[in-house]
Length: 500
Image (cartoon, rainbow, N blue to C red):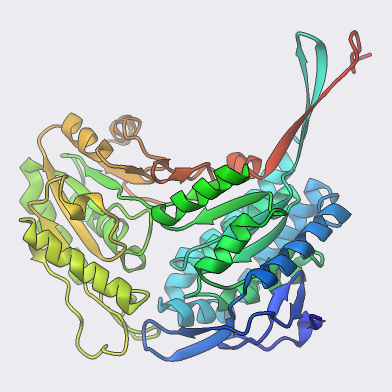
């Protein structure tokens, strides 16, 4: 029999620690599994902590708690405004606990606490506030008049949600799953990435402290088998996944067999289109950052193909190289360090393999990444910028997930748009120009889900997601909330009118 203890007695995981129990439905429960996930800092190699690796039985326990809470109506039956208030309180608590949360996320993934606060916590609390606003303004019921008279259209929560997230921005991704699921009235079982599971337990407790009732939230850390058990569980109504396109395809295929709702936020190979009128001095730092150095290049939205006009190629490349040299690797807390590590040794090897492949394919590394001296305990690599890249090269077509930027030359804007669209992905992008209206017209012709003019960001109030192999569905805004809802039509008697 599973033993549970009140969550207030759970070990403090701030800065790391060993958590021997699973967070199941708002309580700490002994796991069925005997396997353990050990967490090590990719910046220092130091052991950060451990959590149980949930097995299929643990997943079943978590889903049962979620199903029971959903059917009871303890959360589902609260008004949208009440649920919105809890999300807003969760955002407040995250901000109140900034130091401990950012230290823990930093310890797990190696990014500095400052980067965690700006690149993860700020958008994380933003999406919670955005979903709260969407819940308050959403038209949960509407009346329509059609062929047979009046119909009442009702939006209802989809049920139990299984959420699977990646390791690269875990704080943001967790909130971007909890936000819409909870706003809609669903119960949720989260599987964090095995590389960064500790913060999920702390954040689940934050949501409980904000007012999410028992049973609604569970966390089941683990790897592929844990995720498979969650996807295939018959009592999970929807799977939401953020991760690789390869894994997303497998999840979509299985969800299709099971007729399970699914939304996927997958990989990208986005393009930054630099127009000939760009103010280079004002924009080169942000261009390089969003192109390949954000989160050490470990971002699905990174615009790693930088398309530049032939007439300004040398000038732009020279400025990019100088800007990239200003990104200094270092462990969290090191003064002046602004480039974190690659998440694992295997992933760093993959990044270095792409650098070799780029040179073999004929590209020129005008800035070549190396393993920096004095950081041998972590998985660091400095930035690489390639020129002479053609869009058929592997470095221009495949997602590298590291600080590697490919510069591709074009002669006309139409050619640049064609190059940008010549990709199996379509997640993000940007246009760099002194003429915003011109930039918008170019952006409209790029087949990708989100773009920025002279910068890039994901706005919490606007839909985010990908075309083509970058995913299915949208997150954020009304569109993100609606993907966690079912639509019910109630046809009124012939001749009936609610207007009397």
